[in-house]
Length: 394
Image 1: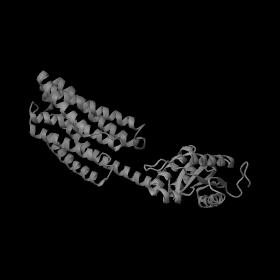
Image 2 (image 1 turned 45 degrees about the vertical axis):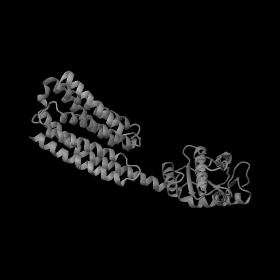
Image 3 (image 1 turned 120 degrees about the vertical axis):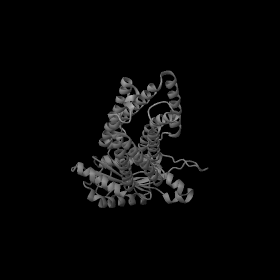
Image 4 (image 1 turned 135 degrees about the vertical axis):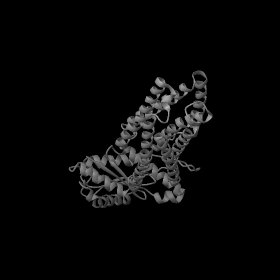
């Protein structure tokens, strides 16, 4: 009686959470983070348990076969939803249809060859293997694809691993005592469905929390990055500078301001779409030529900034020349009849600075050097007044 009540409540929870995930997925335009697949998994499991409530004692029937198939497909759907949550673009419909068809055929063969007891043992073994595999993947994820969610994945692994262990125990009970051990009034079934109800109540809100966590992270990334090039914007640059100087208070940096020459002419001649391609190309060049640990930012328009840490004036000059030469040698392909576009850039170098609060003053000095380079003919590197570098006047 207790198991029946708990199972009935679990059905209600699963169907309600299925609707909740479906509503959430409709509000997430574009990247749904697997919420639509979680809705499908909850729906499959809810219907499986409804069939179990209506199916009566364990045995062979069409309703029992469908119940077993849905019971196995539901966690598979959850696994596919989790893959999508972590940005793995896995298909859903085809794998679930193949699993459903294959497992239905497997049930029929096992029933014909070995009987109902073996068919129920097959489900327990399949579920145990699937849940334990899911737990193993989550543990692996704490060191790889889900390092930023290490604690959450560890908790999920323990809970799902426990479900695998309970299915393994169910398999052992079937093999030792037959189908009588699956009676709804047995202590094991009561404990099993109480645990399932616990998971059914805990895991869906936890998944919703993870979705909100991801949305918050995405909003933060959008707030500090330029949407066109993916580089840091000015706000992101300030935050990154504060972090760098906080981690290393004695650090010294040079600022390189990079401006694409005659960018307005490129926009007027080829159009803004090609202009955007040029901006993205220059951004890629800067990312490839900057050293590891340096910061690259799109300041706005056709202006970019590179912050070079732990280098002297000569090193900053070499970095600026490397950037200027790489941009000059790059070519931007277009989807029009025009040939590949070549562009150049002028670079201004600031004096060394040692704190994020000096960014505005440093930008002004580098911008003055940049303006001097534009006046002197463009496609060149100019240093701020007073900056000492080998081969350059102060």
